[in-house]
Structure formats: structure tokens, C-alpha cells
Image (cartoon, rainbow, N blue to C red; front, top):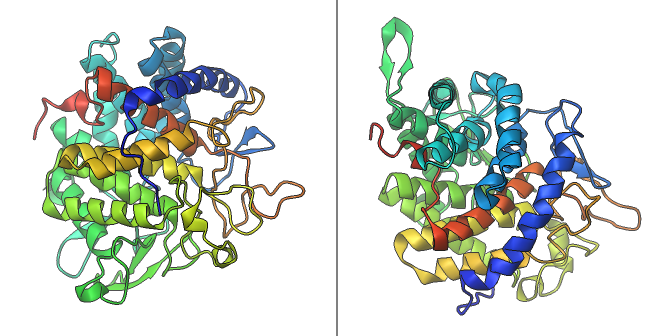
Length: 437
């Protein structure tokens, strides 16, 4: 179980955050000239490589430069982020084949719009950013499948039968588009409300991908998540839980859990609905109870090799163990969810848990201090069932490598912590706070 440090303060993490930003700068620059035009996904022998599945990590690459500028005021990274946004991101705005618009476009166009609103950068490209976000949100909302009760969800790239827990954070695209006054135009000029689709998707994710330990879920554990919920596309009825990247449908893939923690915490900040708050609390509680002492989880809570790690929840995670890999990227995502929920609810337990996880991530063996290694956050796992992660010679499980989403979310976590003290408070919707509500 996560051993929460009740005395830890943000100020105590400042030297580690400063060191992280210093290391981050060189890694962003190295990657800017080393991608060969493809989206960097994860590292192999310390160098970023692509993986042809979906281009869901491009926004994290470009957005990392914008986070670096945000934290350090180094205009070199602003110029890089602007240049890469113009060169790389337009195809993602109208990408009809993925559920990743919030990852790609809010991390880039959304970040730029927020910086413009804060007066940090020139607003000459405001119209371009706003149009990109309007279109992105509408395209994301068009991936719609109805359920038997007449509501619906944004379906994953697997097809209309598939509701991914990941998408809860990617739905930020709908929120921004709605607040910019946009709607999705359907057949016969039907005006489709983006906020309503966001809310329906959130409620259905909370209903079908999160377990609560009572009622329908009496057989299961409160706060556990299923990566995927499957539906009959003919009548919209729920059929079964499933997973693509976890160990099983009845265990918890910890990065999916982390997406739920952060996605619902952000939704609560945006739309203070009890169902979102309950989903956020349940998933955050599960994470605290089922993570090792330092808060860095193994890749799946039901992974079979954990049975051979006696007492693994009572001590810090071991990324070099011979049985199961840890996933530091899940921790980077989850820490921000814990912090946001703690602040919103005024519950110190979540805040201190988030700080405790952040402290572990900002130090070795997780922080990548070797300049030639292009990754920033070590011991991230991508797709264990597909065997995509590198297993080094002499090791039995993946370790020592990085992912683009892990690196991005470590940077975003540090920026969030910076702004807790120095403000303004960091939210994805800060750039459109004055829009349609």
C-alpha cells in the first residue's frame, strides 16, 4: 500500500523539479532532430522509435516543448513547439479514425491557447488554435455509439463496440470545443451538443469501466477499472469487460486506472457531478491501496508474476525484479489525478499521496539522468501482451526504457506542482474559461 508522507510539501520537491527541467531540455532538443518524421512512441536502447498502431503520441512530443517553455520561459522551446504544431499537428485535427483528440490536440493547440489567454505569448495565432480545437472536438464527438438507454459513448479505434477507459481524458477536446461555442452538425442539419456528449461519455465510463464493490459490482473490488467495455452494436446492450493492454478483463491495467483517476479528476474540476467525483475517489482509493509503498505500480494488479514477489505492496517497487515490470508512466498520470482530486475536494490524503508519488518519480531510478538516453522517465511499459517493450540482455522483464506519454506526463506533473505555488492554477480549460458554459 502507498505509504503516504503527510509532511511532504511542494517546496521540498523544487530542487528535484529544477533538475528534471534541466534534464528535460536536452532530451527535447535531441528528439526534435531524431524522429525521421514519425511519431516517437517508446525507446529502444535509449533512442525513441515509432510503432505503427495509431499516431496518438505526436501531441505529447510537441506538447512537451510547450510545457518546457511554460515552466522555464525559454523561448527556444516556444519556437520549437510553434514550429512543430504547424508542421505536424494539422492532420490530427481532422483524424476520424482515433479516440485520441484530447491527447494530441489539447496538448498542443490547447496549450497554445492557454498561454495566449495568460498573456504569456503573442495571440496572433489565436484564431488558428481556436478553429483547430473546434474541429477536433467535433470530430472526436462524431465517433458515437448509442447504448440501450438512449445515451452513448465515444468509441475507441477498435470499433463501435468498444468503450476505452483511456478516452475519459481525451474527451477534453469536446469540452474545449463546446466552450468555444462549437457544435457538431449532423444529418438534416441536426445541432449536436458537445457538452452533452462529453457528459454522457463520462457517465457511461463511470458506469461500465469503473467498479464500486456493491450492487451490480458486488462480486468485485471498489475502484478497479476495466480497460474496455464491450457492447452489442445492434441494440446497445453492455456485454462484457475486456482489455487490450492489461493482463485480463478481471484485473486492473494500471495505466488504464491512472487515465480514469486523472480524467475524472479533471472532469470534476470542469463539471462538478457527483458521479464523476465518486469515480475519481474510487479509482484513487484503489490506486493507493494496491500500489507499492512508493506509489509506483506494477503494470497490472493481477499480473501472475506478482505472486512470486512476496510482500511487494509493503516496500518500494523494484523495476529490476525478474517477474513483472513496473509502469512509471501510470504513476506520472496517477499522481496528477491524486493532486487534482485532493485540491478540489479539500482532502489532504489525496494531495499528500500525489506528492509522495511525485517524489519517487523525480528521483533515480525513475528520472533518466543519462544525457544520451532520449527518454526522461525510465521504466515505462507500453504493451506487455503484444511483447512490444524491450527486454534487455540479462533481464527477464522490460525495464530501463521510456515512453512519450510517460515523459510528457512527468513534465505536466512538474508544471502542475510549480503552479500550485506560483499560479495561475493549471487546467486544460483555462484558455477558454470565458467561453460558452
